[in-house]
Amino acid sequence: MNIENLTSYIEENGNEFKSYRHLCEVLDEKVKGGKSKQLHLKEMGRFFKLSKGKGYRLIVDEVYDKPKMKQTNRRNNVYGEMVELAIMDYLIKSKRHTTTATRNHLLGEIEMINHNFNTCSRNRKKFAEFIEVDVDIVNDFFDNTNGNFRRILERALDELDERAVIKYKVVTIVSKMNGENRKATDEELEFILECEKTVLNDMGYDKKRDVRNSGKWFNFTEEVKKLLHQDGEINYYYSSYEIVVNKKFIKEEHEKIKQYIITESERVDNRDKLTSTIEENLVVNAAKRQEKARVDHEMNEVNRRIRATFSYVDDVKKLVNFVISPKATNINDIKKVG
View (tube, rainbow, N blue to C red):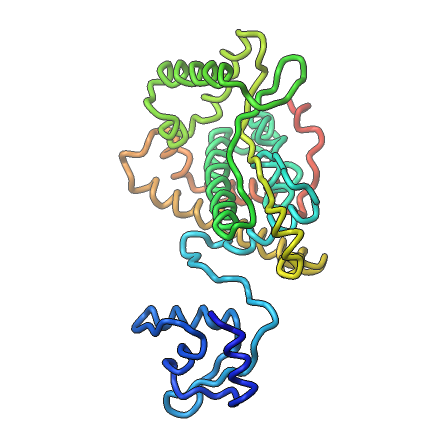
């Protein structure tokens, strides 16, 4: 899109164009039709403000100093640019070219989860006793939430990768019995796979996805850890995102990156909007699961039992208030319960 041509034309001839075709000629753009034309006009709207004149005429009211952020299709990602903006804000503030972070660390940094989430997820039985909610509902909540958050986060990372802002990959970190934490070696990865496959077989499942859908993922991970401990070397393992920020983008395109840096008030507004959307959708999705459980007789027994109860949605609201809401009270003594 030749914006220099557009600016020159406006300076010499004014800001009115005979038609969409005429505007495309000035911009050195291919003329499109139908839905493609509407999408083309929307894309032009990132670079200048456009309004209709008489008949087929178009008026360029303002040419922007820098393009607006691209609006992508968010039908399957209701959080969209809010998450991308929060991730970029975190990466820019960190001032590191390479960041290795777990999913929950990243979620905490962009404030999609609160200070209680990790502790309560690791101590589910005690947490269930503390808030007086069925432990199966607590497991169901964390398994669903972790899966949803992983997809939301990776969609945002993929979008930033597509825009050449970052490169990232998922790496496995092992926590050794001696306290060391590092990337797993090929031999360690093989041993972890052997343990996972053994537990899958013992539980009667073919795929890890089936375990997640069964609501027994927490049980699966605990059994895998027991096998790892028998080796005496690995305490546990976890996945992390290794994110490389585009150095050239930061150094040579400083003006462009300014559009990603938000003020503290804007950051708080973005966080509150994001958190509100997350809380609302977690409850809405719980209601959908409840409705499905009441009619789906093929659902596994545990999920059907807990999701079909009258209290299920209210219990999920309670969980959201404890581990998602930024206003939640810090649960310091959860490990001492019982």
